[in-house]
Length: 401
Image (cartoon, rainbow, N blue to C red; front, top):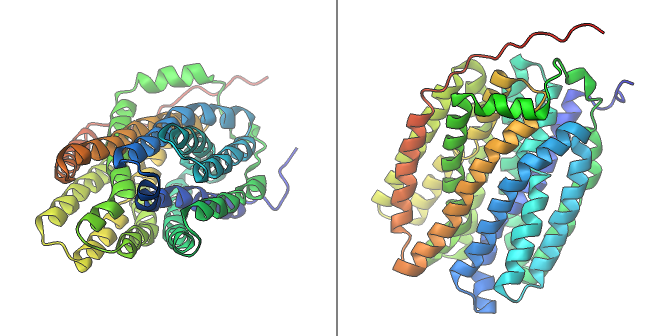
């Protein structure tokens, strides 16, 4: 039975973009709560960092399973279930009074909810909705929408915190996230049209992990997660430590989101027109240069904003290129599953980036060691993407019934 005529590729792309705007934009605003929550509740920064580090770890671990559910039963069902968990977790965050309650709500529930409403689930549908010659650009536009969410939701969240307090801000943002539920109707697929082979999920996993390029790609994604979540969670607090205002930190993260709107599209376009592994390597090496320049130069509001614009342009450029490369090599039938597993590596990096930064700050009173580690990992990621074999796997067509 054909899909309703209104679910065109353009509609799928628009609704997918709004879903990522709400889901990822809200997630990136959690760093704004570090200062007010730790001060009001008497927590250490490590306590807060552990909760968000757990969120990233759960997000990563659950994403491959969410991808399998989406590939088998449909992305819309995964989105609805995940959105409910996401909103419930934020409501519980607002009422958390101890570290374990924060870890349960912000960590376990929100992390599980994100796994069903993040890039892997949405990209699986978008990747199947567009032909190969337009796929990476479409994924780049989707990534840009997620970036717009960061630009939109950070001022939204900071305004709510300033006007109503952090508890009420969390409750309002939880209600906002629930808008994903009606939008998920556009991501219902007929499914069978996308299937060009009879490969099972276990066969697809064996094929992917037997491919050295997939393992290298996942390893580079680990570095991406480490870098991004260190900045997302700790950068506002780092700037306050340097005697800057909370609004400076909010504006810095918002600028990252704004410039990522352009960067995601540009890197997606580059990945569509040039060798994807070289595009990824260039992106990671450029990030390392930007990090090094920021900590080497004198700190001022202007240097913060220039850094935010530069790193924002590089922020999620890895996502459409990585997913596009996976689709190119392995096909789109299990794109959500394979992208989800790659994202698990990303989120292990995110977990370590958030937790190690909090631990090192409490141990040394500074983020300096974490900055240096972030630079070194960027150079490493640039190098390990170079040997990836990009050749498409050609499988025999299924025999006619």
